[in-house]
Image (tube, rainbow, N blue to C red):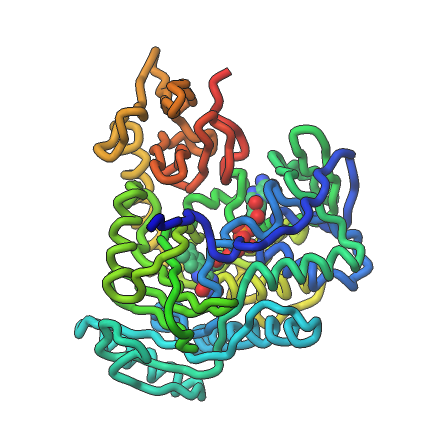
Length: 495
Ligand SMILES: Cc1cc2nc3c(=O)[nH]c(=O)nc-3n(C[C@H](O)[C@H](O)[C@H](O)COP(=O)(O)OP(=O)(O)OC[C@H]3O[C@@H](n4cnc5c(N)ncnc54)[C@H](O)[C@@H]3O)c2cc1C
């Protein structure tokens, strides 16, 4: 029997949207949204009746970014996030974050209902669980927080399936959905409302001018009064010095067929994350995410997928059909970054830093950013302010992650080749410049410059996807050096 494994997300299966045109003129807009993931599309959706001239561009296809690689849970039970926010900012802010997440779930549910969106939405229970005695007290703290927030929750010693668990907190009013069917339906509603959208249109430069911005692609310009950065990770360094404020976490996902949907979703608060949900179309699938690590810590994708497969086969299903990996932007204090990118500048906005909870936070960002663009207040905007003050734990966390990225950067400079490289991949240094060489099955050499244009980290070969990946900030390039994922907007081809 031949087993066909797809190193791609389950959510792109059967998606066959007609490609939208690329930008081919210089245009003007009241609002330019850069990026068509859950953040950008939700922002466009909430601006659709605003009478503003809104333009959305995506460097690739709308919906094919990180949003296509999520596990698609719509839940406010997000590991130990409330413990973290409470220890950074106190009960009130943690409670406000909880309210915001419940509000975001209601936003999505009401869109699904009002527009009859067929996106496999299913109400179900969420669990946070542990199989480690040392974590039980943290879950007890979570239970106390939820109870003090007037939130119904239960304690249980096991999950609804046989899976290592000692203690779990459970809530009932959450859900799961098909994120891409939902997003593409919002996109179509936006299009019908007159929002202009361009695919395969990459912004490579953003210039501030008196009353707005000029965004440049390689051929054209978009002059806009306001710009919303919905591109997951900004493609520029200044202003903001974003790479020093956040870090990226990478996780691996596997999905396989199971006999029956179990109508719950769960995430562990163990030292390593285990995330589980089910999905049904004409078959029932389990979707498992794990091996979460700060980007740069585990770049041997082949080994990581082997470890993932072993875990899923041992505990969940033998019949794995899809595998993929994903990164998300993490913040030091557990709160996303949604609002004005810089202090005293209401023309540049951002939504990111969702700490792997972007289905709720990206949807919420859409609402908050659309309110801010229209000079309206939003009751949640204060806790997500990207310019909020540093607290001591937050500062320590930032320093810690910058140190880790610094180490990754230095190691990438010192090391050329890795044990896991096959014989047809190598990095050489010539006249002080590093080159990456990949020899294909027809013996053709593909040479690239082995340095990321974003912040000059050296790149590591990904033997699964045959790409050169940046261990510092996640840019990815094909074997001929074409950038396929930012933040780099430039290629690394050798002319
Ligand atoms: C393993 C894993 C599982 C997860 N599961 C969940 C979950 O169950 N529930 C949950 O709530 N969250 C989950 N998340 C988090 C969630 O997937 C993300 O937070 C969310 O999808 C981010 O959406 P986004 O719109 O910010 O980014 P994206 O979806 O990446 O959208 C950004 C878009 O911007 C475009 N772009 C980038 N640069 C440019 C440029 N220069 N010019 C033009 N366009 C550009 C890209 O092409 C892309 O389409 C998970 C994350 C991980 C890592």
